[in-house]
Structures are given as structure tokens and as C-alpha cells.
Amino acid sequence: MNYSGLMVTGWQWIGGAWYYMYDNGVMATNGNVSGWNIISSGQAYA
Image 1 (cartoon, rainbow, N blue to C red):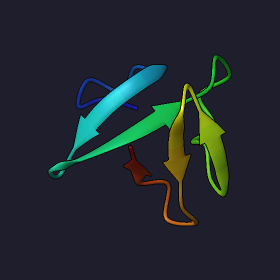
Image 2 (cartoon, rainbow, N blue to C red):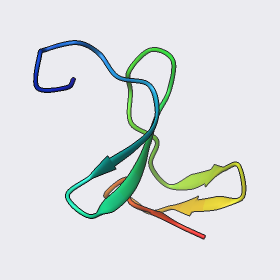
Image 3 (cartoon, rainbow, N blue to C red):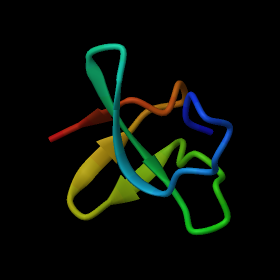
């Protein structure tokens, strides 16, 4: 959710790192999205 309490989706820049939120608002973890590696904390690395 953003600061207004609205659900966010897609790529989000949070605290100096990229995170990916699926269409249902769940954060991606432990996988690959669009060629980016996603670690257990949800941070994405190219």
C-alpha cells in the first residue's frame, strides 16, 4: 500500500531498492520478474 492506503502494483522504488508487486498487491519474493532476480526480502537485482 502507498502512503494513502491504496494498493500498489508493478515496480515500486521503496527505501532505495526496487520491489515488484503482483496485480493482487502481493510482493514478489524468491524468483525472477522481467529478468530481475528477486531475493527473499523482495529486493530486485538486475
